[in-house]
Length: 311
Image 1: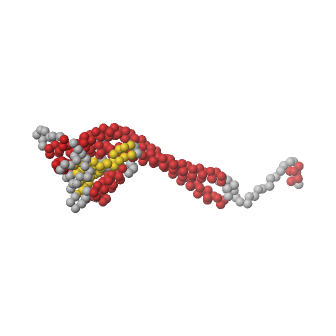
Image 2: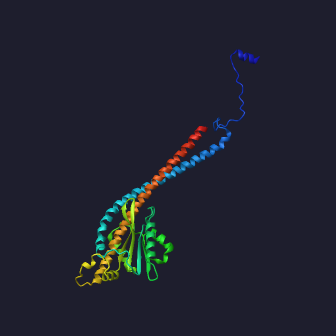
Image 3: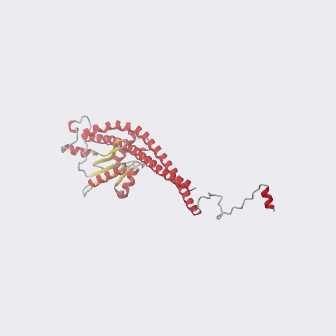
């Protein structure tokens, strides 16, 4: 009777809806329950990719900043390097440069950098130095090292620790000048006995190019010996020595000044090569970081699109 009365009044009673599976209020009902664990794994994966993208962006910022710093330092050193080339060239014309001269005591002066992240310039200098040591070693010959720079020291100390006469580091802590290098050259001459000094460095060509080079400085005794034997010593024999000084004293002064000038140019050339190589290395690192960031962005977008499709 009650139901009939309600129908006459126009009212309806909704039948209860019974779901065969309980509804999870925290996720959509269109996602099957077996995909819940899979979605959790996907969400964790996207978080890992986001963290990786963030770290790659930070690395890219650092490499770009280091490239700009290297470019600024290169501009400051390059003009000094070009001017220093005019110092040692007259000595080469006067005393010559004899890389093949046969002597008993050879000292290889290896110039490298104190910092890394500059490509292979330090490894190249070390390889050339080791090659010179092999060529100038023998039963009646002696070859030692003088190292300028921390990176060459770290490599040569592994297999030639007993052959290192002198190691100097932190040369580029202050702006390079001739006085600083002249004191360094004088320190080497006072502490090392030699017949020939062979300076190994990287000659700057451009930002992306440098040439491993070797300059030879002979002792005054060897210069005089080669001069008397008719060796090729440039224009030395065309000059006459006048005044109170003997020829030996003049040669002593000339070779010492020649060594300081060649060292100054070699240090500047190597510093230019270092900054140019660091610019190239940081530019390559920035490009690699950009390519990695593109790949990570594509992976993240694929994960995100798949999650939206499931939801």
